[in-house]
Structure formats: structure tokens, C-alpha cells
Length: 215
Ligand code: NYM
Image (cartoon, rainbow, N blue to C red; front, side, top):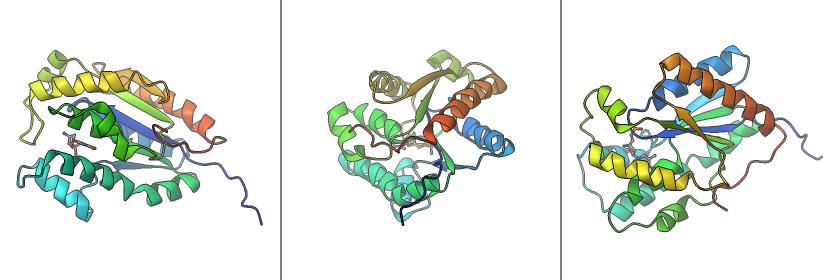
């Protein structure tokens, strides 16, 4: 018997430099979708709960050292290991709201010396294609007003500036549905923009097959 074409959930990603408000906004979006009767769940990368995720977490907390290519591949492997779960949930009609994805992976590694954007994109090529990627745009001065950086790896203003430039290069890719969100508005203003874009895309995704990233 042919499987019935049921409506899939949308894959929605929030990206941006550190402290742009991604986590806060992911939580608010899931809450708003659920309140409108739309099934939704939040995910985040890195997912520090898995065996691979624990290696990544120790590296970010500077409790361990990992060679730069190695950690890049671990971040990617951490996404791939969650793909079966993601596909299953999307097929069940659940919209996934994801805090960081392959774009963070590429932007952070390619901000290191000796890494091309191209090399960095390869391991994540073929991941489930997000239906929408919202980039929370925040200028460095605005970010500075949000207080001190944390103590994790990468949390310096010089590195974050390099990461921002890499995100800007990635956003030129027209095969990805990018939307730039002004993250210097208040929390509710940012949320309104994010919710509007999301509702739009949830509707459209229902009848479209899930794509493959960068393919
Ligand atoms: N990060 C995140 C990477 O370097 N590569 C990746 O693939 C991903 C998903 O890890 N500084 C970096 C970005 C952040 C850190 O922080 C994870 P958080 O607060 O868990 O989002």
C-alpha cells in the first residue's frame, strides 16, 4: 500500500553570532507554535548529550584539546547522528526549531586560519535542508552592551568578528532560504518577526519534500 502523503513539519534554523538571542528566541517560537496548535520541538547543536557531544563540550569548555579538523568533523558527526530522529519527527508533522546548524559549523571553523569555506561545507553536504534559516543580526557594539563574553572557546570579539564575516559569505548562497532578522529590537519585536516568517514557511513546507543541504 502506498504511504499516505501526510503533512510534514518544517525545519527552521536560527543562526547568528554568540549572544544574538538565538536560544531565547527558539524557546519563544516553540511556545508560540504550540499555543497555535502546531506541533513543534526545539533542538540545538551541538547536542552535548551524546557521546560525540560530550567530546565537543569538553573541547568548548577548554577541558580538552582537539585538532581543528577533528573537532570540525565531530561537530558535523553530531548533526548526522541526529538526522534519523529529525527525519522521523518531521515526517510525523512536528516542526523542528533548531538553535544553530551546519552554518555555525562552517562559520566557526572557517574563521580559523587555513580553512576554506568549501572544505568546511563538505561534511555537512546532504544534511536535511532547512526550510528557513533566520540570521539574528547584531552589530558588535550592540553585542558588547549585552555584557561580557563567557569563558568558552571562541568567545572573544576578534574571533566573533571573523565568524560574522563567514556568515555573510554563507548568506550569499541562494539555495538556502535566508532571512535576516534585526536582533537589536526588543525580545518581543524580534519574536514577532521570527513567528511571522515561521508560520509562512510551515504552511509551504507541508506540501514540499525535504531537500538536501548544499546539493
Ligand atoms: N559551534 C557550534 C561550532 O564551532 N561548530 C558547530 O558546528 C556548532 C553547531 O560552538 N561558540 C560553536 C559555536 C558556539 C559553540 O555554543 C556552541 P552554544 O552556546 O552551545 O550555542
